[in-house]
Image 1 (cartoon, rainbow, N blue to C red):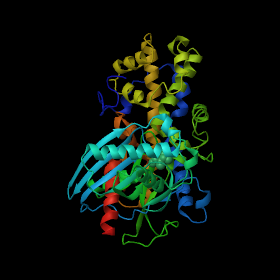
Image 2 (image 1 turned 180 degrees about the horizontal axis):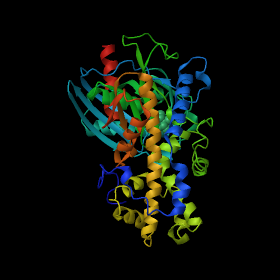
Image 3 (image 1 turned 120 degrees about the vertical axis):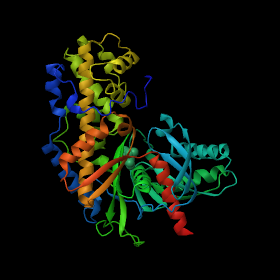
Length: 469
Ligand code: BGC
């Protein structure tokens, strides 16, 4: 572990990408990496593809074959600040699994949360093992926080593609982000959770809502800022949701509760699964995809999210080692190891002040390299910059499409996820690019969601419980 792992360390947050020192980057690295630089024209092409895919996902006749699924979340309202009470929340789908107690009152939200690990064996084992672990963690949380005698409503943030049949029921469409438990596909996840809780018999709770982490992020940010209409995740995975008119959401099949709107979980990660983004993918992207747990799937996610950015950096570096252009042709054994370059390394390497290599040296030492030249580190940093900038540009393109679709003059985008949170320049790069891509008549802002999945789950649970009461 580097000393600055998972912290916003040494944040040269104000530093502009234009201030990058690129003249020292070796000519070969610059030349090859030119393919990673997306022009505004290419980004506009990406936006058109995304926009067309959203239309297909929303419409009844094209939805079955659509790539971007535009799942109905059944959340029709954003919070209005009157949500009150104590709720439990589960958050499964990122790097960690969390259990939270959320105490809501007007203008107040107290969170207590514990993190439980979900080892790889559980992510790729059996459904019973995973859900027994979830129920056991929930029971442990309840005991540790003295909640045994309360009967609490629970919101379940489940961050995988889910075909919902209502707020309390959703069948798993596919696993992503390294999870793979085939027997659960097509199963109602809420039913599995309820049954695991019943098997234990020591937990009294009411599962009253299931939601995606993007919905959690939107709800949580909208609770703080009523202009929020979009939720986005740039973490282990990538996705976005937004508030759509019910009249456009042809798959929506419940009565309007008054807002005329419904949140759509786009499942934007799948954009490109039909080859529609091939015009901007590189050979390295294709290699990363081929070696991933789900080749050919979640193509947009593989260009954007934390699960893959480190791999893209590793593959480019390996390419330059093999051609003798980096590390004197040495260390291909290190860079041949899948997963050795974590995405947090990118954030840390880019947190070094320009011309300094303190974090870079720490990271290289961590993976066993102590003989890097300054040129190697300049080139490595450049690779990181281009990989993270491309991710930020593609997020900017996605968010710009949604802002245009919503059509309101002033919209806030709530964003969560480790890449967005910890990369020192991500927000700035994304925001600047959105200004290039959007008509200046659209005002917008990007808002970091803090504890979005937890607070958002509690808010959805609160709204459901208060409506049922
Ligand atoms: C999942 C989405 C989720 C996103 C962010 C993707 O892999 O398909 O449902 O919202 O990751 O966690």
